[in-house]
Image (cartoon, rainbow, N blue to C red; front, side, top):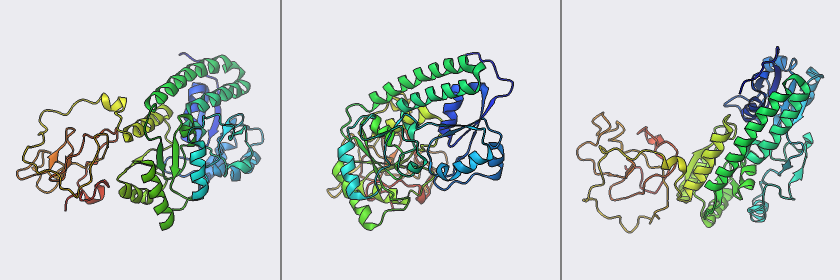
Length: 403
């Protein structure tokens, strides 16, 4: 798509990287976008730098998502640049409350809203009051349907600020809208007819995604703090009762509590960052992880090439699993580390091949299990742990890694 570039692109500030992607998709080369919260920073504790504040004083537009830091800083932003336009993307959207952190209320909320559609009447329509920044969920970009609405609001705002670019903004928004509609259908297909529609998450950042596709997120943290022993035990019991195996974490938060829950329920911890810039790929990967936790092979996994012929098959001399080892269904998915003799560890020949005397069994995808234990092929799209260091062994069934 050809586009005329404005003599001076509009200077636009956004709170987080997903919003930068959204503005650039609609504005193209007629906008110059800067993001406040950079990778590795948390929107909950973020403070703008003096350089950012100086640049903000010259901005044409600030796109507000309703993140915690914005309520405290918006008066200062407006004071530094009274002429700057502000687009609050929450206006007109069906906002949802942030998950309650009281366990009893949270359990009621999950049962009441597990199958509510995104346009639930319990959601507050068009709430853009800064006082709601802590109470309302700000992660509106995790739903393709809501992103389509935000893109339309962006198109209109940019057109008012730059009338010469109005036709271009309309063209780009229409193309983006078609992509989002296709993504919405793709995600719905991946998540259709799952036996288990819940997942654990350290920080409840996926509420709009869960609402859109009739899922339930179960948060681990409470007001940004790790759960105590009683809370942790209740979460483990809830996860076992629901059959939940997937625990999501994001880089901005400590994952130790999530790891303890995963170890207790025989689940797996996966890192998915809601602040990642690529909206489509991030949401697609999340959907595939949830599907894989249900024993369903994702489209991405099905496109992977088969194991190469040099990988040795499981040998027939392996002893059967002993009775104290838990049974595993064919649909279970585990992140099993590579055998140390394959990864350059003790006993390795340094070339990634099995050394003599290695009695660990290889699965069909090149991963290995302890002696006498057989695991199904890994179905997640997550990359395996390649380091043989003890700290990189995933938390799976008791007795693994080997002593």
